[in-house]
Image (cartoon, rainbow, N blue to C red; front, top):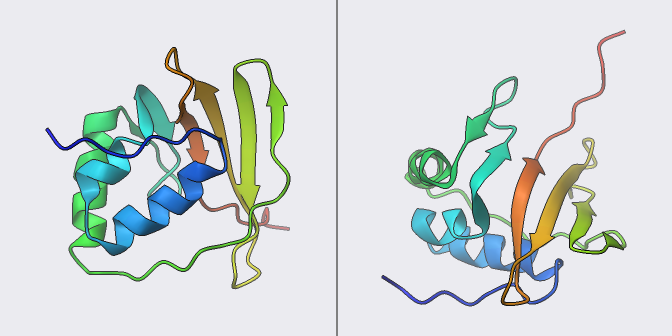
Length: 121
């Protein structure tokens, strides 16, 4: 198994996500999530568990999308939980993740909402 760089700060996960996605590394993206993490993607549904997240990203990355780094908003930390978020470059909504500190001090995503869309009016 590949030894991946660990996110030692909650904000590191976003950078590692962009690097691994742009390298086409679905397994590396999945390693940023806890085993039972929940990803709110594709829109309107949920992908649950690291293996399912890896399979989803393998399909997404097969199209070789290019991700650009986004400047994170201030992280909120309470004990071993943190909320990270970024405003998308296209100005559409926001992205937010709940991450948890692991026993080795690194951080992994447990909840990931990559796309917020405004409610229908």
